[in-house]
Length: 501
Ligand SMILES: [Zn+2]
Image 1 (tube, rainbow, N blue to C red):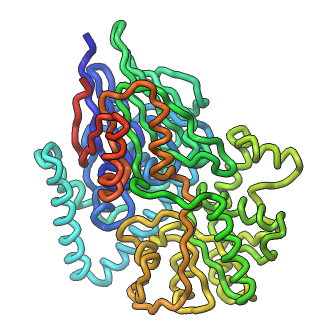
Image 2: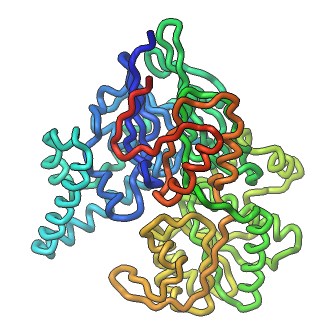
């Protein structure tokens, strides 16, 4: 008899952030990802909702990859009592270290400025706290189990405190335990895990979990974020042929990306137009993955003589450090990229790129001689240096804002991409006069046909395929097509628990 097993869906349900799943057997509790909710305030408030379990009772955390929406709550988890190993590829752990320390620093800075604001404006701060508390209560109430606990007071007093500090983060980093792709290891009593290359960013993994009770065995596969076949630098997503249960991401459900060749052509065209117009090409980009890919493609275009050699500003300390991690893990690169390295090309570098370190250098870019190109973080313009550049240049017809990545619902990036004529940044209303262009073909995520093709590798169908990590429209478009392939599907909601029987 197989013991009872439960899967708790604790994030990335009907949304693309906050990935977190808890697999529970009679003997063990294993978390898969512990990501931060990002994007709209409605989502972000969920980071303050107490964990749905006792962190001290978790046996292990398996991490798919280093993006903040998959790893961002780890220091909060460990500060709340989690002391067990965190397993991921060494590439993921190297990147996660950067991501979490940066996140902790931002949290501390934000908390300090919020506290200063509260001291100067006690009435307004009190009103805001009340509003946040109400939101928090509403978010907590969505989960009946949490509502019965004495959860809110602790969370309310913590509203102005950072979610975690740099010290919390350093304590969490001590729990990291690197494992190789393909090596199966026991992570908790009766629970074995294998990481398979997900082809999404460096080190990213699909996680296959085998649960063993006596001579019975069940397999659960967590797709993590799936990359696109044929993406530059890293390898393609690993085909998986069987599972008893499957969780698949659906970020691009209902969507088909431009072919990669078209994306590269559009990038080249934007560079050439910027050169001719002596303008500024501003590319908001995720620091990890997308930035390296854009630099790779710019370098290829330049080598091929397709684009003029415009100065490129890499205005993201995080992206610079992430590129160093990429260079330290050549073993994860695909054959094409390794061949370029063997020919003494430096495929993830752009000749004479200007790497800015201080905020002062960043601000000076706007005064620099044009034409020029800037790649800055973050990709959805919800924070980071990109925000100041957009603020300074959004009214400038000589600037082209080129979106090369996904824009989540409710973000500044999404509203600009959808053609907003006016935007509000730092409390200022600004008219939009810059050019806005988008390229979808650089996605680090498989599009719908690629997700369906990956599912097509299954020679036996899972009992249930859970569709996760997608906005509601994407999931609604995707689910019928997965069913049409013969998969039984479910779209779990936040904090839903499913018995795996
Ligand atoms: Zn990701």
